[in-house]
Length: 219
Image (cartoon, rainbow, N blue to C red):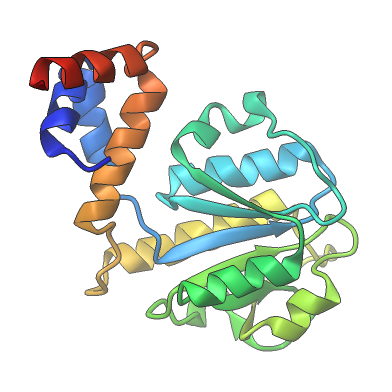
């Protein structure tokens, strides 16, 4: 549905504050970066990652549920799952294949591989940051398929961070650099319209009735 007149009509049922809030948030949204979680055991970890994605303007989250399949913890995500697009996959292979078809490089986040430190990460490439299970880390397939490895420098006895903490640190760093760059990172016009429709639909309880009434009035 791409009728701009219909969109304007639907948005007229929103409060001015909500309408302005949508517009402001959408100007900061990006698909230049995305995140993938791979069979995370603890439900609150996946939910917290989704929340971080919303906070830092990441529009899409990719969830691999090859072994573990659980609902999103609404309390932890604090409604973020309503505003962030969740792409679910049954296998790591299908997730990576889809991401590559959309032009993403696969970035394995791992503290054990000497490759690229966060401060040196090249933000010019569309990238998906992969985060693995709490104890085992990323699967061998994800490691084998990775285009590059990324690590957060650590200087204590602990060798790893909770995945939700790692995701927050990485996303804050790369999105901050992205917004200061000349890279075209914002959503396209068609993507903006699509999200406006989506968010209005999720906001208006009588969305279908309003659309039906609009179409009836047009005939």
